[in-house]
Image (cartoon, rainbow, N blue to C red):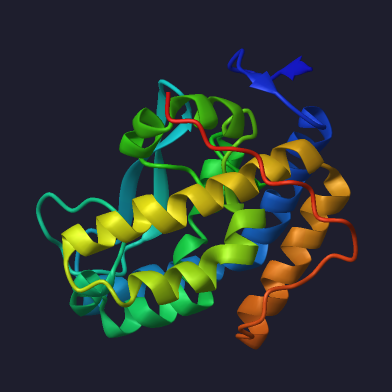
Length: 234
């Protein structure tokens, strides 16, 4: 067990993973900075300000940060929670493309350079999720939150299909809390215990293949599946 720069417990290979994150982020920023500049200009012309969506997320229990994304939705006061069908009308045409291609997440390279996120890890949760599942998130967030992760790779498309059937904020919240979040947390706990640089590279490779090919099938690893850990709310 080691500690990261904020004193929080870290697992796996924190130094090698952090070195990989910084080097890979710098390499990607060289060509992608041009892409981000073009996207920012288009968004400014088409949608106006703000160009970026700064969302409060948790990097550890009691530690929040501002996750950066290109704004893909019409502005609305008191926006919170998962994006179900009741929010689809707010997604702009260009925002739909940015979400599908995941270009909207390119600004998170700066979150990575600041040490708030990693390329691979559990998706950074809302404060309300951490407060609802404190013991589980205390374990899950021993890994720095990621742009992609095992739960994202395995469950993201299935979650989209579940939430696409929710036509109200209440239905979305029920479906997310009862079906999506517990499933993703179990996968995040599996990642916590199987954490390795080889697994991170496998997740990155398969995430890239899914985004580029738009395939629906989730990738499979030829190994025995670990038993799913239990989720604790207390």
